[in-house]
Image 1 (cartoon, rainbow, N blue to C red):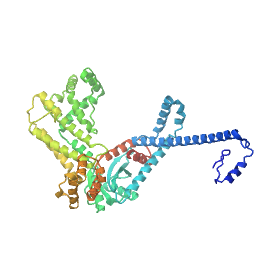
Image 2 (tube, rainbow, N blue to C red):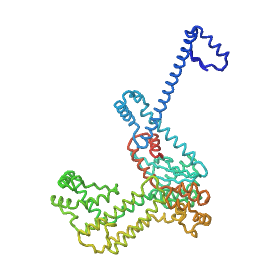
Image 3 (cartoon, one colour):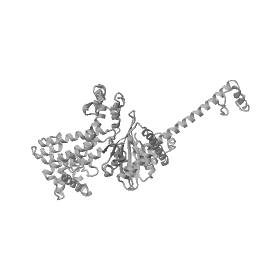
Image 4 (tube, rainbow, N blue to C red):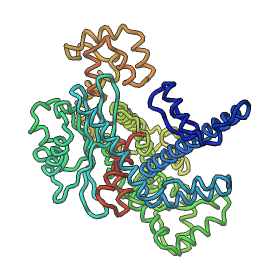
Length: 549
């Protein structure tokens, strides 16, 4: 109960106490009022109180919304890897926009608590919240998890190891986050990385016996047979005999694509591109020549960059499409050009087709929601395609469907029936490259198939403890239809409680990483490392940058 005259709150709701307090206001101007005037005064006091409470509630709500805005903006800055000082520019932009669109409320936006210190505090709270949630999850005994490591060097030449974790709980909840950021002050041998990993495990109380797989790059410090990180991990933890260790699929495919197929042709093509692009004056002259033709008015010759190898296929196609203009330009410069050689042109066309196919494969392997088995299947399919292309070449069946640039070139040169033994040899080398680099995945294919395609398994080849459940599953039309429809395996196994052994096996395999996260880690180190910051701030922003949406 509150007094409308003095705003005093009475401790007890007793009539005697209310009367006693009322009599203390004998001197108040409203005390002597009677009749309608007394009722009007009472209503006026009530209205004033309601207005006061409404104003306070509006202030509280407005303040809460302003705080929420700071968290939202801090999260966006962190996800984009932007420096905290950008918040001042953002606030200035907000105020300018509101002053034009809604000038009456511009003062509200000027009072938004947006500063560098505020954003730092907000990102620290966000990162701490993500970390606490993750620690609560991974400390459960029934959680299977996998680790992915990405070792890189920042702008200050400090070696950093990003530890990612993918965890699957008993009820098939999946969590994929940055676990920790370790700094190596000295050397980066396998032993150094392993010691740093043990510190992380001890600090976070990780149960290493639940570790299912480790994804690394192909560096000797990671995959060395005796002193590599994986070897030391297995040596110290003898109960990890079933540990799956593999080299990042995306990275291995990059290496296969960079293998020296028709390297001489590629080098000569790069020399042609660099002759035009490296010299600014020659590049301007070449562009001027292209602008005189309507077909090439807005076209340019792209610059070749070895690091960005995905652009190689596009560079080769562009050279082929502009070969006549390039030849004319070389003649004007008084230079000889390899593009006048028919054999070189055929090799260039074939190389362009093969690089384009590998670039397309790489794009298919990218993405945030890729399962390891899904990526491995795409590699297997591509290997079969290479064998098919080899068969076509042996038969001299060069179609525009499979070899568009080569077929076009052969048609121009009138040599459709030519036999290309050299190209068959190139495909043999590519097939061998893919087979050797992905040999470790062949070993784990049966186990992965049990988790992702159990309805296609030969029961006689399955482990004895799973055979009875596989027979039951083979007659379960609902489960089979879900797998055939390519539904999310996590959702399928979450509800397949009638197959406990298969479900447990699947839960282990579903914890294995695809490889998107490690490439994201490299991006985080590169983007965030461009700015000079204290280690604490770098760790906070890396956690925010790599946290799940």
